[in-house]
Image (cartoon, rainbow, N blue to C red):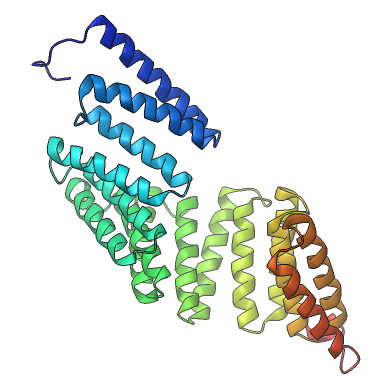
Length: 337
């Protein structure tokens, strides 16, 4: 509060204290994923602070941002955008067009418009956030890397993989400089670059990036960490496309082992990996292994996703196709791999 504003009365002081308590409760409920009650407390706090400080105060703007985060979690993206814009206008009036608070709003708007499928708007918002962050921090800052990541993500959704690769690479370069070669965030960026290269059909380059990601994860985590499973799955996908089926299966089995330990056997991650193994067996004409694996996928699907899930129909189709092939030419797994 500026020095030319009158000091708050005792009543106002108690109301501010109440608003602060409501904010803390809202934050706690947000962490517990109780979004309706979190929103209710944030709105109560916002109402109090608007009455005391006015609708154009910085305290009010920051509460608008918190309310928008709840709307985002509830997938109420239009309301979230409207609420972020309220904060944006306050920051613009109070702090100018190039403040870091404005950059944060641009970032939030970029993410929210991306969720609504408005990719051009999303890129424009992220580019504005990037411009302000570079202005404040220079090129080599993690918030600048975050903006590069956000832009790359939108381009990836547009299938513009060259632009995707360019911005993921910029993000990686900053992370290596700021965090070092062996940081988990660097591993994530290598994985993102691998995905962009894979989408361009550059399998050998993608394989190299995925291996770099895996090697960093091995340095950062124990052997059963789920991040390693993601890398093993990515490697398996490349090996499958290269028709290196033995290596694909080896990596899928490593992936499966980690997911079982992390999530239990009856989990979506295990279901998805088992399905990939079954498809691998089917494509390589290992019919009995394929049928056995698809039947396990069907059982898992019932347990994990419910009777009406789409995987069930796909599994039935795969089993029918595979059983028709049995007896024609059915090599065992060793002869295929």
